Length: 46
Image 1: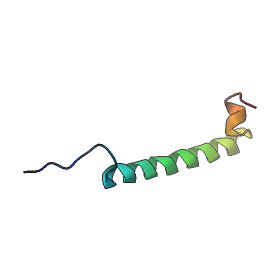
Image 2 (image 1 turned 45 degrees about the horizontal axis):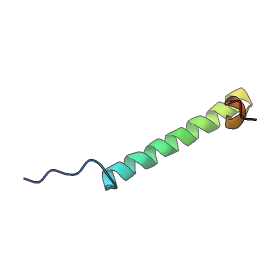
Image 3 (image 1 turned 180 degrees about the vertical axis):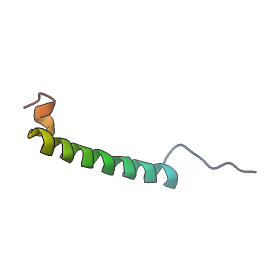
Image 4 (image 1 turned 90 degrees about the vertical axis):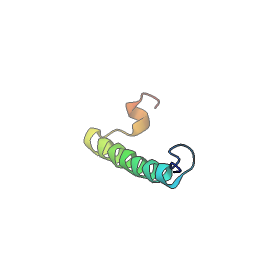
């Protein structure tokens, strides 16, 4: 029996990468709305 690959550029990995990227973007925008500062300002880069 052949096991599915779990590492590399697989559909499974790409789906999770996209989902986590969307989640991170939404959290970043929500944090900006709550604090009134941009992400770079929160990190002390601006």
